[in-house]
Image 1 (cartoon, rainbow, N blue to C red):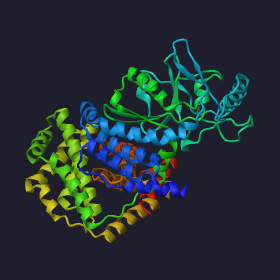
Image 2 (cartoon, rainbow, N blue to C red):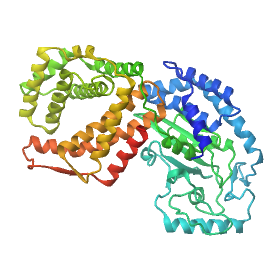
Image 3 (tube, one colour):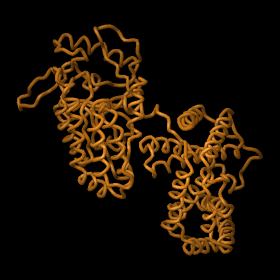
Length: 519
């Protein structure tokens, strides 16, 4: 990556935030920063990192789609200001653009493919360029184009870049962009040696003389029923003007998107920005004051769900073989997850780097009881419920929280490096004993908790969110194997010594995650 671009990106990510502020206040701050740094800070960096950060954070933070849309409406002025800033910068760049267009009978303008030549082409030239790209794509294709409609829309992958074209009949054709954002295109009729595996805008149009109303790229973010879609008119093939995005916005509204949740940005290169985000490493240097703050986030989450009376009542029912409601079981699972995160926070940030025994025991016993409940082994459910009740009758595990004492920065750094080293040493093996495999799963989850707590602190939110999701998904992937082992254990079908193979793909993902975080 260009070193100057990386420095700009890191600068943008380090710009001040307005913690605890509303979305409109955060975006107002972004716009003020933009105005201050316009001369030397690329709009691409600021508008699609810090600006995107605030919107994605709002998506994750609001409880419902209605609340999210209300926040977007409240910040409409600030969002429009950022679009205006973006358009002002790119308006200068677009002064030289010379799109080749034709006018339909109804007055609509269609853009013709100029194949990144920067000039108008004859029909014969377009056919030659098209024939080359079409032939090479048919040779190498991996990803396929599809029509974006009500049926395919739910299958869009989050945080993936899709290219699109909007045809005059209203059809939207889309396809995943090639990883690393490199878009294949013909040039001077010479054959390209680069692999042409993913459809570009030429392939999406599917005919040399096919005009489009709009073309560009998009990225979807989703959390439950809340959706946020960024759009860009970035495509050198058709040289579409920024106003073409309005036609795409209307087409997406017809598919069920709310207008407020569609964010068109002029000429932003999603491929370049999205992948540069993934190349940046996160600084996990944590001071003592920050350790206290991160721990407090985990503690607050735990205490919100901690209800001793409710827990005892549910366990007493399970002890005697009575069923509990689905709502109660879901609550117990959420409670256990919050206890696990608090335990991880003790490991990460306490000067002893170990959680108090009552919390460790609570988390372990809750896990065993919920495993038995999931598999459907009443005897094991009753046994673990009894052990939990014996623990809770003695005292409240929440009392152990006062034992937390934040670690010094050096101590935290050493612990994290040790955690990474343990993970790296485990994944060097082709297979692991089931107990070692379980330890690896827990260590991956612990790093995920670290990044999850970063998001609560607004610390490099977009990067932390992405990394936390990767680590939690790895934990979930490994949990399937461990859950199957637990099920065999509860059903007394365990072999003497079980070994679990480590797939190459899993090892690569884990190594990439630890390399990104700890350096």
